[in-house]
Image (cartoon, rainbow over all chains, first blue to last red; front, side):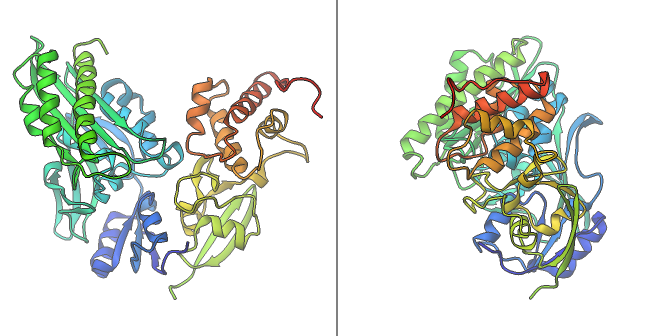
Length: 291
Length: 170
């Protein structure tokens, strides 16, 4: 299948890319990894008249800890997160999610930020970033701003960003002394989208009590969802079986799945409960130093 | 029609240049512009991995990249395997261990395996299975594909390997 014709631009600086987007308005789409956009173009579900390819802009990839946060550059590929020693040691939630996105070949090309702004509710990074309380650094016609992840997703395939905006990176809170996380994904086969997936992140204080909790859900709503009642069920408590059970049930309540060939509404909702409990148990073990 | 763009790529050590439409996918560029049909189109939906090529040594799906994006890069396709007319270890492995039946997935399978062995010369079975998990074999010949990669790994590490296929092949 052949995509519709378009004009191609490969700017070498962010300013040039922003000018191109400003000049072409709605006509233009940003191309990063292209692992969602190019399939959509092949099916002619997307027919942008202009593509602005960011891959020639230097310095937009990489995962680093700096100034008290974790920074993921916008052109960072999933595989780079998966292979990062820093991420493996300190951010298990990110490592686990990166390892189960699509398949290994797609992971070599697709980007974290591109996946986020694609806003597919079955995308993995949205749930992870909701659980982490991430912020996106966005450059647009009016300069730079930070967009909290809670304000990103509008509905399926739609974000609050404007056509002239470019995400330049993602900022996450730095891992605390006693923090842990896990990503539990149920998929039919490698490369399939999640039937259901749950991202969990916990921070414990010196007494082993949850000082912060984040729970994000994949593929059970019009967008990735944050299960706030489930988070509240954990904060101020020790993450024991009773607290995890209550949180998992609250997470299932927060889900609003639709039935498809991956499962019924009831099945998916119950899988949210099951996967939330598994993810929270592992996150708690990790935060408690057992991971 | 959109303006054409110049694509200059090195494929298997040979430089090629052509003017193409930006919408031309890399796999079509290889097959239709360069007449290198070893790179297969399997699914056209970014699922099967038959079109996998190495871009600067890294496996990529050439159906999910525009040719223009390969401009200035170094590509390896299945035609680039083998040295001096002989087979290189990964090819020899597929030959010795019966790693192919219909052969359609084989170019992609060998290229992801080559990339794996370049990084990890002694992979576990689980690591091999994980590395090829983006490549579908609809003959379902995965057992022998895994053995083929193990054969190649051993050949690369020790200089020799023996086929696990019993008896004399007919």
